[in-house]
Image 1 (cartoon, rainbow, N blue to C red):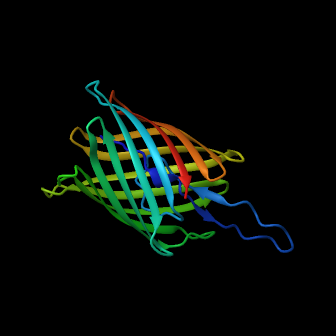
Image 2: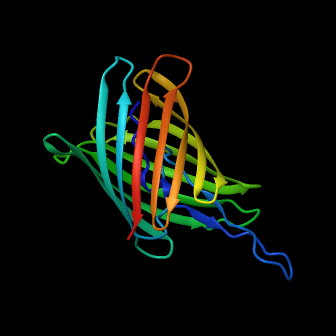
Length: 229
């Protein structure tokens, strides 16, 4: 199981709450994610640098710095491109086209979809198709994703899913709780963990962990710094 931080997961879709008559508008509720596969198009240009430290079941530790640029292409579409940097330079690259199918509103789920590729610069890698939903329950912003991942050289789709819940602890400070499941070489695996997000102006800092449940398995720890451009 390989988990890479969703660098644009911190790009939130704001769900406006209806204002009461002759009263000020309610605060916005934000639905976002860190590790969840992100099908939501970016709302603005953002540059993110993420550092992931992953411990595999065999005990191997893999460190992966990732640089990602996200930009909108229109009102409902966006593009992300990313690069995994290793000691020898570029190890993996990726790109994702994302589309907002339906805007979220009180009582209505927002829907989005994405198609992405991630792999070595010389070719190969994986192609992913994902569908996402987002909404709110009281002060909690919720996001969910269903996806299928397939290698470019063989037809063997691997399903995956995830859920993220975000709540504001203090102005500028949010707690995210995520559950991610996928079917890999060792069978089905479910991982869960928390993430803290600190926003200061146009910049954001996220620190999170994701640990496989039920058996000694994959562990991921990630630190991400992002800034709106």
